[in-house]
Length: 454
Image (cartoon, rainbow, N blue to C red):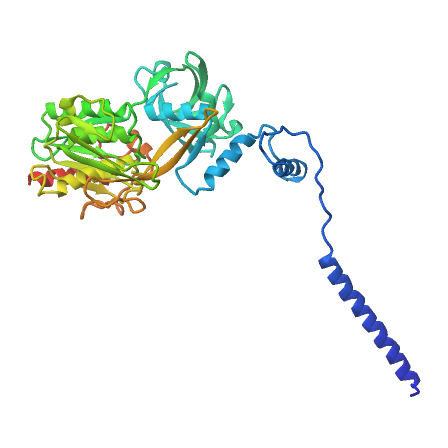
């Protein structure tokens, strides 16, 4: 068939269009399918780690060469791998410690350590700079001798601002040190800064704070705030309760807000001092390699827990009505303390003479599991969850928490938002918070004690 001139040029145009489309599609698909340039492993001088496969060293080399964030020269690969293995268990309370880290961890739990002798939290100053706030200054400490006070803000350490140090945690690392050494702290107080030279020394952390507060009529209650269940807590607590009883108080207030727990043996002995003879806790393990056991007190002796109390102290029991103040940061040993008092007060059949106990505040954290630490051959340590500990008679509260007594839930009214609110009151046991508002939880706890007598 012969094409006309017009048909011929239309045919040529169609061929060109098809060719153009074909080239365009080929170009597009070729660009999409073309592999990105391969980044090949380039040997880099990097410290070898015994037992670590080459691929991990390759990862390190690639990160050093190409990563926007890089990799620090002093990266502790051994520690990173150990922590990664621990993290793989998804145990939220498991930790890997080097020998030095574990020694510091144990010192903190014991309540006896070397330092300047303060309790702190962190916040920002008016201009947004980080600062360390002193919540308490321990009697006889280097901080007290240097003239530091509650409420002071540390804004620089040895002349370097907290901003330049990298924040509060880095500054705290700088403040720690060996006994007898000194550190210079720049402190902001009443709008003015001043430098204080503080000598580090042997310190005992205060964990029990006591005050006497009025009830209706001529009655008085002992307010006992417990910040942790450390080794030193036991004696502080027993002495505080004994002094309160000798003073003739009509009731006891135990403030466990922001208390995250501590040693099981410590809280068990504190409960043995308060409770009549009977069970304190039941320990249940998952592993068949560990045997379940009970903690109890009877006839001045304890089973299932070490005891440093005398037989007379173990046999002691309180006869005063009690209120326990709790919040969402009341956890672990604090919850065992709370639940044990609640259980005995509720068990009228077995313990008809045990006094009333009112739980005031908001639902607790919900940690009813037990951790233990085991050493590794190189001196490092693994802390891991091994089981649950049940209260004396009630259900385990793990993942659930402990609810306040009906009618004493102050969650919607409470205004204490930080632990500092309790430390920085004008007076221990005051019902007024630092900002002038009411400590609603404490007010309701006092109401609970007053109701016992009305």
